[in-house]
Length: 260
Image 1 (tube, rainbow, N blue to C red):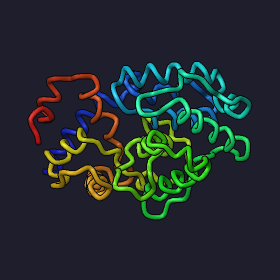
Image 2: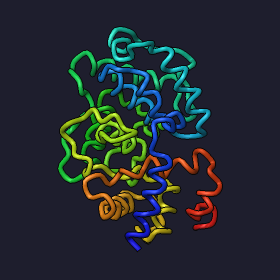
Image 3: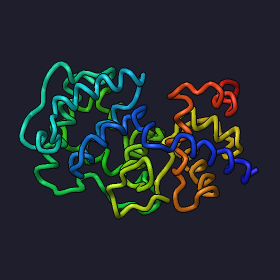
């Protein structure tokens, strides 16, 4: 069973793990910049706002990065970004303004990388630390529902999918990820778990769990380590393409339309 799964995933990986398909992903914004400081900030913003319809995500990020200009890190250091166009779904204008302001303050005080944190067990260590630090940087009155949805809660039941996605981009050095961080090993990453990946994992008997919790994410990641020990997230980008690109033949083959 394991070898059959590996062959299937290798086939999907060979089909979709190509730079051209980055254009279908929020990761595309990171590659618009060369400066590591800009890439780190752009990656975080692209990942945290990566929820909802793809077209809506891209529309908002297009506006945001147009505001931040060719050097987003420098812009945040030097300018207080405000405006009604910073509203996105569950985030009010003020929620987004607060996040941009905190990042600007961190960029003023710290050198690159400003978001890399120590990891002992797995990437949730770094994620919880960052969520704590970000939330502690704003007044209590600013910790709204929109802020919490965007940034998250440390140690929460949530799988922190968008944070896991950010760290995949920053840690992995294989296509399609730029891999800017050097102190976190790829085998400390956790799968950015959603219902799509959960269905594939259950179909291939990588988990029997039905809920998207941190323990489920850890179990699925451990199963992927049996396929790629040092790089368990190797298949993540490719496995998410069929749904995003509406590859009906592959979706049917993966049983994503029928598996419960």
